[in-house]
Amino acid sequence: MIKIDDPLVQQSFQELATYIALPSVSAKHQAQKQTADFLKKLLEEVGAQVQVLTDYPAPLVFAEIKPQQPSTTTILIYNHYDVQPEEPVELWHSDPFHLKITKDKLIGRGAADCKGDFISRLTALRRYQQKHGDWPCNIKFLLEGEEEIASEHLPQYLAKYHELLAADLVLWESGSKNEQEQFSIQGGNKGVLCFELVANSAAIDLHSSYAAVVDSAPWRLVAAINSLRDADGHIKIPGFYEQVLPPTSREQELVEQAAVPDLQEKWQLTLPLLKNKSVNYNLTFSPTINIEGLSSGWEGPGVKTVTPKTARAKLEFRLVPNQDPQEIFTQLTQYLQDQGFSDIQVNYLLGESAYRWDLQHPLVDLLVETAQKCYGGADQIELLPSSPGTGPMALINQYTQAPIVACGVGYSKSGNHAPNENIRISDYLEFIEFFDQFLERL
Ligand SMILES: [Zn+2]
Image 1 (cartoon, helix red, strand yellow):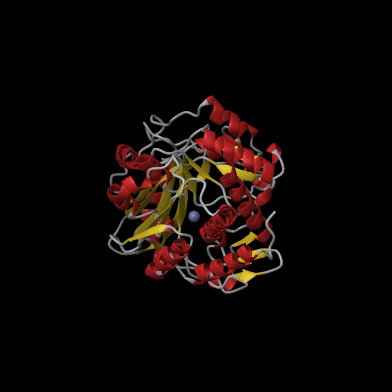
Image 2: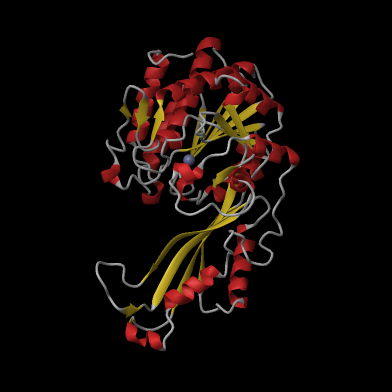
C-alpha cells in the first residue's frame, strides 16, 4: 500500500491544500475562474491537453491524456470543482478553506465532495505514470463548476461539446464507505423536481379574531400539501407512477444483498419509518415527496395573534428513471387544480432526471475485482444500482451513452455539505492504491 510519507502523497496533500483554499462556492459564484485555472495547471503537469471552456460564468474544464501506445479504451473522469457554502461557520472547528491535516483526517470544505476524490485520482495516475512512463488507456476529465447548484449550464455545455466526451466508462465524482465500512460502488442517482407552493389569502395580515369567519393562507397551504401524499408516503397525483421504470431482477438482487442501515438509531428518529417496501428498496427504487421548508406568519419570540396573508412551502420529488421532471410538474399543477387549489401558486425551481443501471460491464467487473482485492474481499464491497441522492448522471449518460460508476474516498461520517467535512487519510491512501491497481489491470 502506498504510504503517507511517499513523496507523491505529500505532493498531493499540498495540491489538495491549494485546491481547498480556493473558496469555489458556486451558490456565491466565488473563485470560479481561479479554480478552473488551477485545475488546468495541475492537469497540464501530468501531460494532459486541457481546454477551459468559458461559454458560461463557471468555466468547464475538459482534459485528455493519451498513451503513446494507442488504446481503444477511454475512461472519462467526472468531478466538480464547486463546493457547498461553508455556513454555519461557527460550527466548524477549523477554517473551512484551510486544509487541516490531523493524525488520521483531512478536514476542509470539499475534502469529501469532491476535491479529495479528484486529487486522489490524479495521484493514482501520477503513480502509474511514474512506474510505466505511459498511460494504460485514454483518460478524459470533465470538471464542472456548478454541480452544487444543479449543474445549471451543463446541459448547454454538453449540447455544444458532447463530441469531446466519447468514452467507454465514466468514473463519477465521489463515493464513500457505508456504515458497515464497506467500499460502496454505485451505478446511478435519483432525479429531482424542486418546486414552491404559495398561498395568498388577503391584502394584509389580519387581527386573528377574524379567524372566526376568514380562512387563511397557512390553512390553505397545508390542505394543498396534505392532498399530495398519504400517510405511508404514497404520492396521490394521478399518473405520477406511470412512467416509473421497474427494477430488473439483477438490480433487485444487488439491493437485497446490501446491508440495511439502521436509520432509527443513526438519527434517533422520533417517528416510525414509512410503512412500505424495504428500506433499501425505497432508498434505491422509489420516488418520494419531501417538504423542505414551510413559512408563514409570526415566527419570532412570544405571541402575535395574527391571521397571515401569505404562506409558502418548498418541496421536492426525488424521481426514478423514466420520470420526466417537466411532465411531473404538469401533473402536479393539474392535480392541484382538480383538487380545488387553483388559487395556490406553483413555481418550478429545478429539475434533473434519474439514471440507474445494473453494473454489468467488463470494465466494471474489473473495477469490482480490483476493489475486492484492495478493500479486503467480496464482503467488504457494496454494489448498488443507484444512490438515493441526485446529480447530473442522466445528462452525462445521454451524451456519452457510457455506463457510469461512482466510488471514492469518503466514509459514513464525512459530513458532505456539513461543517467539518472530512475524509480519513487511510481511505485516501487506500483509494490511490485501488485506482492505481485498476489502471494496472486495464
Ligand atoms: Zn459532489
